[in-house]
Length: 536
Ligand code: AMP
Image 1: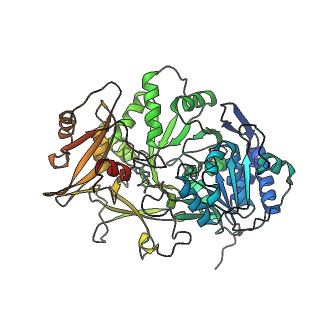
Image 2: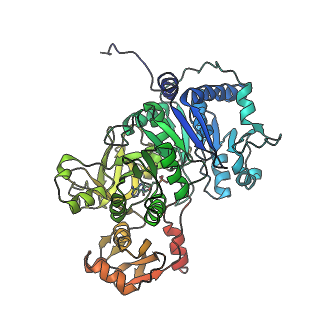
Image 3: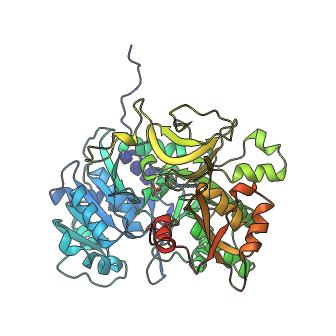
């Protein structure tokens, strides 16, 4: 029997309409390239997004067509996040940190018809312009300088567009957004989000045990809008009415801390590299910034060491872990303190906070071992983390041989090695390809890195496997020392032997100036292997 409820599809349009009616005067602040602050309201944003939708429609964009963006976190990018799906198009956020040839490959693979690009990113565009074939380039004049007539000026486009464009009807399963994975192995893979998955993700990620968002909050996503939808914050903040502060191209610690203080930010989100920079700035000048006492930072994208949580606590600020991937929209798990954990002693509480937390509502996670058996939720048995749910990808865009990424019973194979404990805390111990297999036992490179980074003289550490005649593989640790510190292999070994079983402690250490990073700010084990093991 059908229910007597209305048949209302879940659409991004409704987030837009809600923002315009309920939070018309709530602010969106953007730090421009010259550091001036651009201010608009959700009311302004909704009107401009509707104009963009009308302009794209007038340009011949059809439902399902892809419109790409090449932009920093700004008001214009936010307008694209809403305006493109509102007219039925697919907003394809292109990662500006990828190599120009990869960007061109992605744009061609997605068959993007239009590219919206920040004027400050035109030099990047020039590096792949000849390799792509889009119909039109729309330039956002963030600097205020006039736009080359070879391109369409975004502001003129909006000014000439109708303010009353009627948003076309759509199905909630229609695609609205698209991101490509960073492609650490093989070509990047495209993930298509739907209106339904995006709305449900926005709703659930706003819950108190996840991002905990409300119209009283001020959110600053450091995580870029060109990578995994800025963790969905543009949508969840608009849904809840939270004020948004968008940092533009200035992601250095001092600029971010200035913005936190000036705009009274209380929630921010980014990768560990960002928080490492912020910690170092706070350690150097603890009294320089007047931050909100309830400021909390969500960290994800790669593992954050427990020492980082402790150091932030020392500054009276809270770091919360979350885990996800391009394929999971991205929120899969997030940290919080369940009642049973609140009763534990301090070290045990930190150990739980150093995990990636518990599974987000409406999704399910499980661990499957090497032989395909379901692992117990004992916090010890490692295996591949698998996930399913309404905002988890079930296939990739135009990729035929993608079945090995999914199980036959409908779960996404994440490629992450993890444990889940009896309270549901998920601990990511590695990527399948990074885990070290020594004498038949798995050594987690992430846990080793975290322990090494717990040494006060260490700034950063990354661990890779190296072939070993006796053990198959043994860990090799690359270490960056903190400024002014000198360390030896013996210092690190002594530190580790006090914390880990002897067989896990590396024999080999190299001290390096920096750890190479991927386009998304994660340690690049691939590049590290190429430098440290050129003959492998
Ligand atoms: P991407 O699709 O580029 O966001 O990469 C997703 C991958 O980042 C995941 O499969 C994990 O390997 C890693 N990752 C994301 N969040 C975390 C986290 N909190 N701790 C450890 N690894 C993470």
